[in-house]
Length: 117
Image (cartoon, rainbow, N blue to C red; front, top):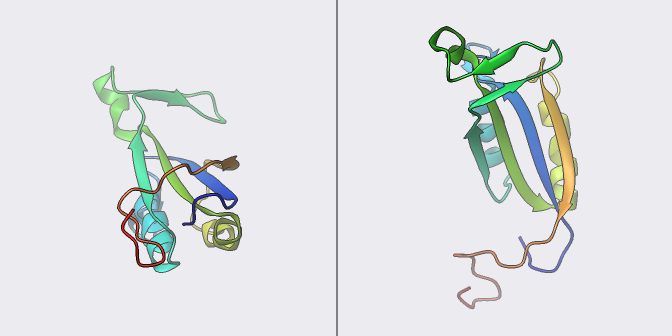
């Protein structure tokens, strides 16, 4: 990732129990992002949320805490994120993917042109 170039943040919202070929969907997205050479991916677990069918998923009620909302977030250069989007086809059956432009002001721990960041 280069500071100053156009970057996008891809956020994929899925359910914790969503599966793809007996694997969690979020884990498959992270694996594919790594295999695609993207800068990184993180998964964030929500405390509460609802989606298309208006069913609330919450950690406050034990019986509903099995399918909490998750956000898989990936930030990289615009062309890399756009090239990655087709990777979501077929593995995300429920959820939403959004892309927004972000400004990367510092990429810590990154070496560019042989100089430490």
